[in-house]
Length: 217
Length: 217
DNA sequence: TGACATAGTTACTAAATAATAACTATATCA
DNA sequence: TGATATAGTTATTATTTAGTAACTATGTCA
Image 1 (cartoon, each protein chain N blue to C red):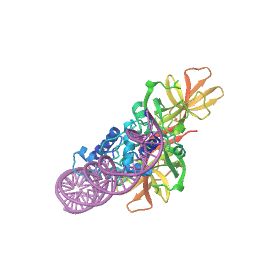
Image 2 (spheres, rainbow over the protein chains, first blue to last red; image 1 turned 90 degrees about the vertical axis):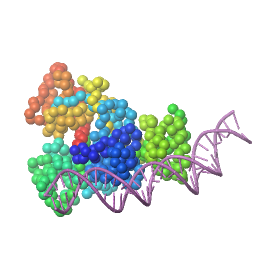
Image 3 (cartoon, rainbow over the protein chains, first blue to last red; image 1 turned 45 degrees about the horizontal axis):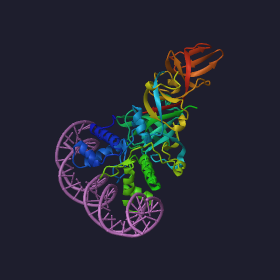
Image 4 (cartoon, rainbow over the protein chains, first blue to last red; image 1 turned 180 degrees about the horizontal axis):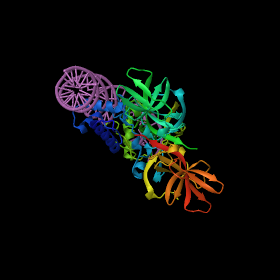
């Protein structure tokens, strides 16, 4: 949660805790009460910020319509929690030991196939998969054929891996904000970085990679 | 467990479905709309009945305050729902375009955490996750911290990535059957291959890697 | 038959809730 | 210095939502 301010973190934490304790999300007034602030405009702005940064989604006009989008929530320390919340998960398996070793709303006709995934990793409408083609991110251990789980958002932090739309084509790059421009860096020395200067409009950030899924035959 | 009437079942099913799809429970008016009845008194009485029979709890005066008390109880034997692909275990996301760019049954005490996964990726009981440690498979794009989905099996094909138990420790290697021995090859030039000759018993194949799952913060 | 549970209607009210307007204040940045 | 982002206040409003009143209808049961 490095991208959030302290205040925003406490809002997020409260929503998460409230949701767990009550089974449904809090109202703005309840959040305001917890933050000990009066009125709910402050809360609205916190929620707007959280939404812009991709941590929650909301449905305008609906009460208690906050959804958490963070995939890290799909982990659980103990089995009881998983079973108690079973309906929120598609399926679960044990993890043993360790080994040493421009398409925020993709159009229907672009859909190639479907893949199921933990619901909590993908609550919002602004999440989808991209199938990776090419080897431009090979040094980030992302290969041709991998499914990249993308969270739609127009902003990013340094070193995030983002989906950029370049000349109408989606491409994965690592994001760096530099003095007077943005640099989109492939993780493969054979490819050159892309520089986006202020005002250039043929390159845009579509979302951020939040997961990688690979199936080996 | 008390019995539900047909109408009450459909109310319960709708609440469950709505909760899964939206992340928060429906309002009474939304339930009424789904049941195609006008007014919400009918809904209130259904909810009261469900509450009396122990299927839900509510908080008086709060909007969207319905909680399912036994989420594992499914009335989704409902054929329409299964056919529509909305059974309670699966969730689907679209895949858009392409980007250029010795533990068959792991003992309870080895379990570190749980993670949910597509049930189709894990049909049989002999499937589990291993958390990857180290960089011995880095050239196969498998990193420290990745979750490797393992299918338990003692045999393997050439070039499969397998989990081998070496000196009591699990390790990922690529599998090669050669003239008079088996070679377990790391995908990192800094590491040496392991050779298993006929009759050696301190190295065994535990299973095969069938998936890689990575969460980026 | 009458008693009872279930299921529905229309009309209404009060409380809860989201959203907006018009301000103030503070810290950071170039 | 001024611009910007963050964080807050009070006041107000429109909508959403839960809950109530008064009624009809149908099936089951003893």
